[in-house]
Length: 318
Image (tube, rainbow, N blue to C red; front, side):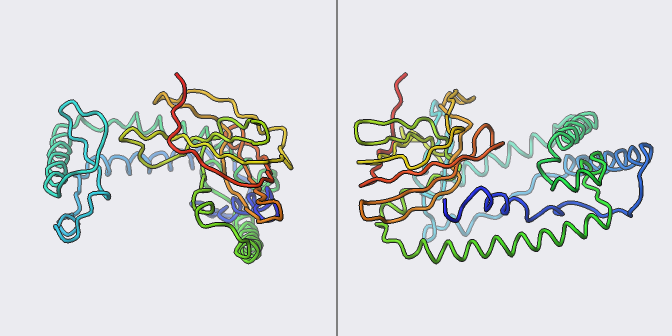
């Protein structure tokens, strides 16, 4: 990678240290004081959850979108039931209206018949979130912050004023450096002569890498696309074929270990993040950045090839 490097990615993750964080005075905090902060925040979380739980469901007015002159069936999905398990696009605005009315009645009935609010469930969720933040706060903040601030405070979103101000300065510097790289990347990548159909098709952010195999003089990369709707017999799997290809770089961590998710679809912890594509004398050079092992590490893959082809809607063997 020339621009979207691991360092660039870390800059992108280091621009909002103080988001959802509150300043507290500079001092040494005792265990008793930290416990008081914990109890205060827990009480506030339970109160917020109680308000949300006791707030009646609200439904926006969709009448303008359902007028015949503005209705676009491709914008909607319906779940009609009656033996049909897969969602589909509606045949008319009336079908959408019927589903919205049904969902409204079901939500109102569920609200009217809800059991009493259970503060114990809110406390459980809060404690689990607090423990998770304790474990991962070293990934969320620079190392110097974890040396200066009790991690129990960080897990509660509390930072002493002097540390907070220094973090604000770092955020500003990181944003400046990030924007400089972004401008340089756009200038360089816009100069490349990449066919529109290839540039548009090569869009795999957050897709899972399932395999990368050499087939003769080609390399085939199998991905599972993330997001979107894959009904009507469409699968989320796509194969990218690099013809007459040479691997310029493949870092050791880039070894996808596949598994089945809860929906029975194949996935891996090797996730496609960003890419750069260059036109070269022999064809194309594609630089890719992946997150591996649940995003705990990053790895590069660089391929030089003659052509790039795509096979969509791949059906995997059972």
